[in-house]
Image 1: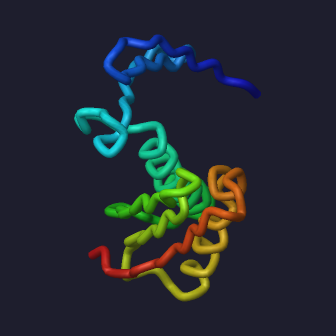
Image 2: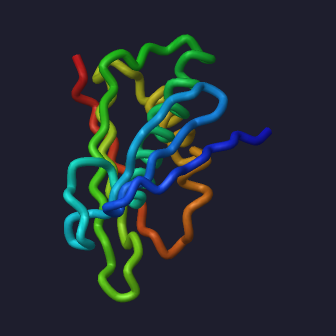
Length: 137
């Protein structure tokens, strides 16, 4: 399966991206520390967002398949950059899940999280610790 995403340079270190299957459009820009205005996601911000979103989506797929509710699930991911060479060094992720989940179900969902395609696609040089917190009521 493939998906095409096209991009157009808008000037001022901004790029307009179009997701061809849906027509959805978003704009990225260089981060402030690289001369951008900081008004939109940078390309590396999208990697962090993709990681957090992918983990939650993978958990939701497994939960739905097994009849579990993950209503209220939320996450927080932090992007930590390495200055030289400039690249993503770490993406610590905290996933908040329902406190009502049983231990066996928690383990199943945590295993699923580790199988998310973004997690498996990034270099082993990028640290991606995931913390699961069961506090959603």
